[in-house]
Length: 618
Image 1 (cartoon, rainbow, N blue to C red):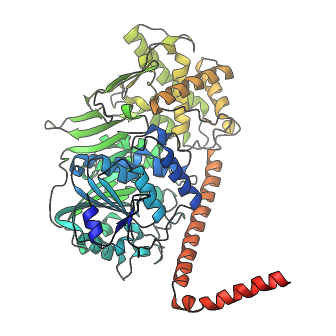
Image 2: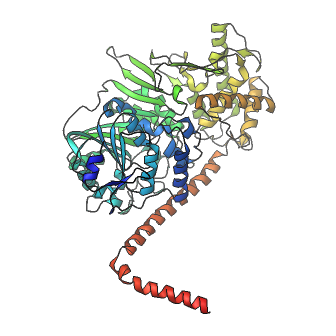
Image 3: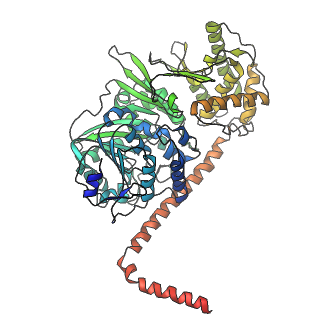
């Protein structure tokens, strides 16, 4: 698509890797490390399926770098814009390892991806190797030289680095001015960036680029560091660059791995319908933080109620243009929710919107190649209800999070709440199927396999309602497994369990056995092994690959904080070392390209010859 333009401006395509570059092209100093990037490159190169929703790539995810570069959630950021991307001329600035590039290409956009490091450009090309509508250029953006313009330009996780790669007193405005050169008069700029005032930072999360808590909030950014902004300041920077029309969306838990995207309308109007989605996304964030000042998910209730969501969202997704122009008509839409951490045929979109009669409706659709929203396997059946009215209320699981967040919480109170859940399940099964639960071995219909507290809404009038019942087993199963799933998900999804004297030494496994006992459904360790085997089989079917994780049976229920603290400390040290390494590499590069280094080259050569001679003769 761009071959003629690139060739006319001195770029040549490397026949071995398909990357376009000029002889004078220079790399920027940015990397996740040789071992990390070579591993990512190897995984993508060996994979048969490199699509966004590839289960093959997902099966290789086992740490933060692989999740960041291979995770399907990366593409969710732009899913609301899928129709607007089709057939457009798109310039992607900073393609990284090609996660977003791949989605732009799959949407049918004609993509020119510019990446400043040669290895990452190669990885991007490998990720898009079967997409003829994607071209990858290895070039620093400030050195890009093309006489063409684009319908859409993306800066996903890039603008914050203007300090490092753009010279001048106002590097962010200068970078945007450079971007504007390549944008058509009616074109659109898409930006994704962290919010300097994100709620997670107030809770104690380290600044994403520096790795130090409160760093961004206190405005400690240096001239040679990545820098983020709050909403008002970011709007002003865009205005200063001539982008008069701006529209914001808010990805959760952040723009790097979003599963929920909230609209301006929802936060401006304080719509509580989006709250369960935001809270769920925050709880499932892959970046857990140990020393939190508060439970971020719980605080979001007050933030939404006070219409402050736009100011405290953890990230921004922005579409900007020179003049007012409707990029996407999502009038009435409150939020999008994407389920993409599963094999392709089970992936789905949930859109919550207000219709003409002011009723709030949920619309679901499959994201798989086959639009049919129903699938069967030998073990599992999946079917989504395409449209239903929104259920107002509180997730029953939130009651447990509130309880276990309190110091010296009591197990008996936990049991009391869980008994309410068990009673609801018993009554629902008796009413709908005539079944009776007497012990953990009582068999219940397969359609109740996902009837866990996270999928139960408690209305203001006290009534209960099951939601998201998309999964059904093709056979009856033991009630004990459902109860085990309920307790396990509460433990896993809670930010943490506050200290309580009676549980400090209890492992997860012993805690679950103890809870079953107090509920009147005694089990043994062997029963838990059976439940975990069923759980792993269920997860493997959903994910599309064998899944057999260590669920932390021997972890103390209240000790996860100490593990997280150690992990967080090590990650902070690694980030600081990476930053120092990048600074030293930049100094070395400046030294090697300096005139004095070139002039003294003969002296260094003579010195080497003398050393070799002395070594041989001595």
